[in-house]
Amino acid sequence: MAALLTVPSFSSSALSARTPLRHSSPAVRAPPPFSCHYCRSRRASERRRLTVKAAETDANEVKAVAPEKAPSSGGSSLNQLLGIKGAARESNKWKIRLQLTKPVTWPPLVWGVVCGAAASGNFHWNIEDVAKAIVCMIMSGPCLTGYTQTLNDWYDREIDAINEPYRPIPSGAISEGEVITQIWVLLLAGLGLAGLLDVWAGHKSPDIFFLAVGGSLLSYIYSAPPLKLKQNGWIGNFALGASYICLPWWAGQALFGTLTPDIIVLTLLYSIAGLGIAIVNDFKSIEGDRALGLQSLPVAFGMDTAKWICVGAIDITQFSVAAYLLGADKTFYALALLGLILPQIYFQFQYFLKDPVKYDVEYQTSAQPFLILGLLVTALATSH
Image (tube, rainbow, N blue to C red; front, side, top):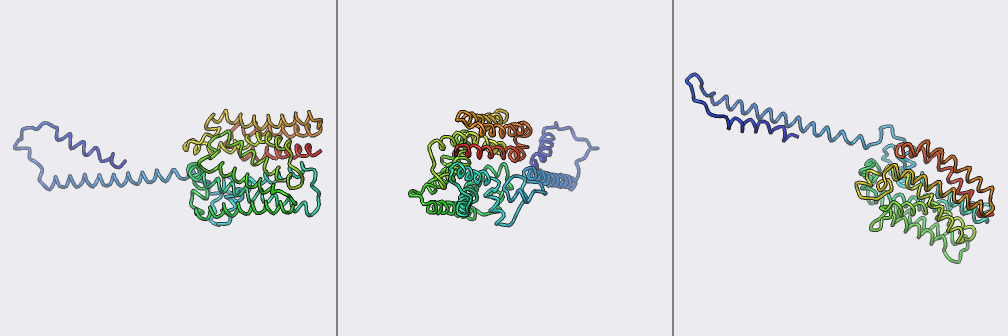
């Protein structure tokens, strides 16, 4: 901009150079030398002043962009601890570490363990079984989900620099070494607890440890190159949904009973609903995903089509499971599941289908409790 403002003086000089010369007259004299020097000095001074003002304008315009990406000054401390958007800025390293693990994502995994324990038909309300379940929940939630979320934030740092530059990693609130250390500590803690649970349950083969290793590997290839499953909206979201529904269920059922093939198939089918839940989180990242070439479903199909794919995956899956339970003469459980689907459809129209970006938190907090209760209904149905 500053360069453009100096162009007119150059053009004026060039124009005067092309002006035809006129015959001199005794009444018309050339200005004295000091006047030319004064004019040149004045023009140079004006150019410098304009240049300084233009530079100040450029600087102000650059600074004005940042607040559009930054959270409001009244960001929530609770949101920061839960690891969701609208978080307040934090300098305490332990709070930042907790934010990276996204505690808001732990409950589905913890609930999955409950469903697996219920489906086993062998859980008893005594101190030992409750203690086993709590350790399994810690393994699935804070440790391995925390590992997954921190790993994902690490490999998403370039996307977050576009979508949410104020997040801990792109903003520099936590160093590279501290993030990598956290990833390893959470992974090893989760695998260690998995091995402990196998010993505690008296398994001849380390079933829970194998599940933990498989889930951790899936988390890695979901986030990290060269595979980076999340680059493909269908494969990535199904992998994420299966991780949230299948793995904790399988761990809970293996801990207290036997993991059977029919349960494996049923939970994998239920993971199609998990695919729909995973799509919900893609809408807020559409800008960065598009910029970096990630084919999330909102990028590939557009927001309007993707939001219907999302709710369709969630609802059709649950209706199908209800039909399966009805066909298996588990009428009470089928009707209970249908009763839990209806509020989800209401909240889909109330929030998500209106604006999946603006109302994503409201939709998830209102609708997902009914979905996870439906999982427990299905688990209880399979145990009887």
